[in-house]
Length: 283
Length: 337
Image (tube, rainbow over the protein chains, first blue to last red):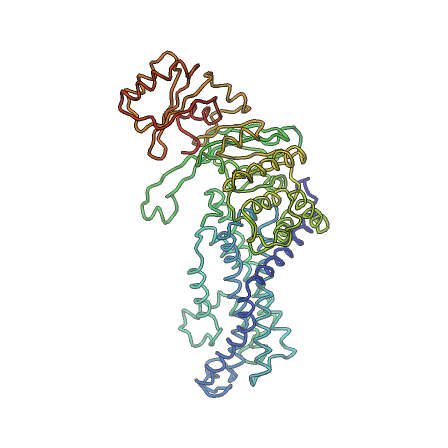
């Protein structure tokens, strides 16, 4: 325990800093107008792509052939939910790690590192920004689908889906810490992020049910929290097999604990190594 | 302060960078090589002292500052900053210091100066009310109040450096580390900036300052005491006045020559009025410094020896010893090599 700052003041300071990191991220984001255009159009374009793709394959929003794999005929709801939840995964993978990489490239990372604030506070601020961004994209996708497309996803049961997504986010923050460690260890992160992003999209039931995958690949999906968040959400909305809410909640909480602890430990190792090697800020 | 009147203290601080010992590098059987960045550094810097680390590029100045500011872990030795151990109490050390690095891009160029300071202030865990007031005061101190809403990308290099200094002082730390604070600034702004450091920050705000530079005039003008650092080692430490006094000779003749031969140097060294000489190459020319009690007593003989050796005197000047001369005498090479 130190006597330089009382604990309660420190906690307040850390919470306050989280909000300032969020504020800074929003301001920097707003200073590039092209990002606003991307944010406005992205939810609609991605959903329309999925819709037209489905139309081209089966001509309708329901498919009996699809039911034999997924346990539901409603492939459009299936795929829209997959897309909406994958936004959170994608943002978590790209978010914190790339934000730290950006600070490294801008030359501001050492100024952050030398500050007394906990580095996890900085990550939480960035994660909050990513979370808000993801919530906006996912919400707009669901809203747009419900208004324009022949599906209705703005139903009271979405509260449970949001709850499962909330639990998923914590596990994804652990993944974010892991990626930050990767930035400190290897500097380059873009190719690695792309690889993980694509791999997760392929082996989890985002665009198709696990039953279409070869058994060893489908087995790997069991070690990824998105699988349970997706199956729980879809099952609760009646578009897929379902166990019980408690089952999905417990599994996601276990993932949260394991991934935050593991991600934090990897970051801690990488940070100490970078401070030993003197390459926190090197490109 | 946590006790004594010593602000910064180091004991045998050592840092060696090892490259080529990573897993992938070992697999590729890359050669392991080591660079000594800081070697057995022992320092005691007093409260409110303006202390300079003077040395050429790559001498270990920045590494030492990074170790003291907890950005870099030492391999051996120990150090305390404001009474706190740099390894065991990194939070307390960070609360006690402000740091500016020589990189110009240490601020967000797409944020205004006020937004930058408010953001970094929050990272120093300042209270909300305190933060707004502090940012306003510090912009006032730096003479930048009227530019608080300008984006940093529109600032001159000098004003960016002022913002960086303002950021380092946000939490009102007792100790400041300034790494090459005037690098890249034009001479007149450098002079203005040095005044801010000396008068406003050191004297008025009573900050202890550890400053690195490879500009001898800067160190001479600003610092209460100076440590010369070369190849990671402190090779001399005293006040600028005493360091210059350490050269017994009253005059130095500096020749710029087209070539240098061993015979020439040997013959100049034998002259009675010459106490020693140092020479080095710079930009394809040869600099010869002759240390003497009286330039007039040996000038003619030296020019004769140079001419006999078929070298040309491109220019020469006589001067009183400067800090650079002390450094050259100690190391045999200049600060700007």
